[in-house]
Length: 237
Ligand SMILES: NC(=O)c1ccc[n+]([C@@H]2O[C@H](COP(=O)([O-])OP(=O)(O)OC[C@H]3O[C@@H](n4cnc5c(N)ncnc54)[C@H](OP(=O)(O)O)[C@@H]3O)[C@@H](O)[C@H]2O)c1
Picture 1 (tube, protein in one colour):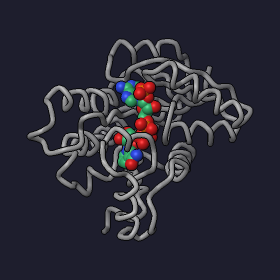
Picture 2: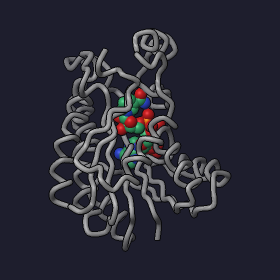
Picture 3: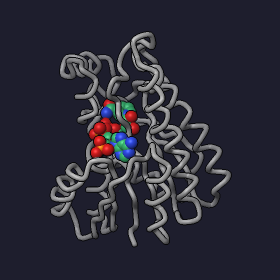
Picture 4: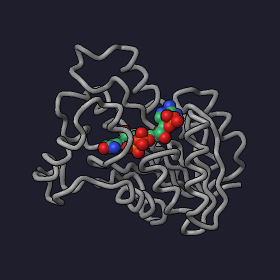
């Protein structure tokens, strides 16, 4: 038995959320593809709070993995999905392989739908997905990820009706300093400094900024069918 399952909880925003929920006294299960990453995350989390920590190795792009993940769960209060793999997605569409594009859609969009399919009936509180600012402020360099992120809003609206009274929402982060940026092959520090000057918040986000937003959405019983933008004002620049 666990209170929250975080798919993608081995690093970045998902790990920050795990730390937040454990500090609140919840039991948390983190899920990812790499057993080593989960073991490292677990060691970090053991200092975070009193709740129990579980780990499950699963690839949310694979139906059998998502089905098996939820088959071992009788009841869970909250599911949060932060998983994404941005390897090879940064660049113009002409330069992105179709295999990479399919993998993005398989994980981010179809994987999210699989979570709704297999978690429905077991989740009692909420499902929260993670999209991103590129869905709302495209920059011509990550179009397929932007499209998958944008589609998550429609998925959440549909599932919020279908799975009600389970609440289904999306948190849409702006640029956040996590390991995801290491996959993009760009000068992160320069890009962050340039963006921070333009953003109303005058800084990029931290994993804890987004963890706080997830926590609010999970715990507020009147938020459903909503996209919560946590982007330092990026969407209105
Ligand atoms: N960082 C940003 O600036 C930013 C901006 C907008 C939106 N976002 C979105 O925010 C979410 C969280 O990103 P983050 O920055 O926290 O990234 P991150 O640190 O790279 O974390 C992503 C996690 O997802 C796991 N994962 C990747 N593919 C998976 C799969 N197929 N099945 C299961 N787990 C998988 C990874 O672990 P394994 O590799 O071990 O599986 C990793 O622990 C993502 O959906 C991303 O698109 C990020």
